[in-house]
Length: 61
Image 1: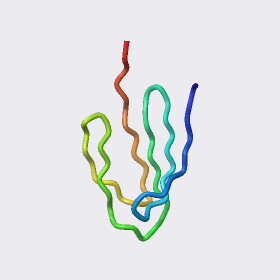
Image 2: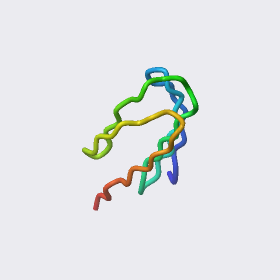
Image 3: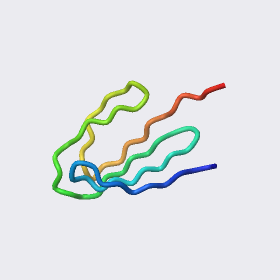
Image 4: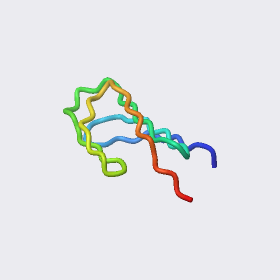
């Protein structure tokens, strides 16, 4: 599989997720939801709706 695309609702956020072998991209739509906390590969960050975040993924042998 080259890529997986999903749209989910989480705590009032409408999120588009694009998962590839190298990264996870999260895009939030302009909702009035409060910020949420995302944790990817041990990196914790605040996510604000209306933004896009790209998280590099570790490669496994």
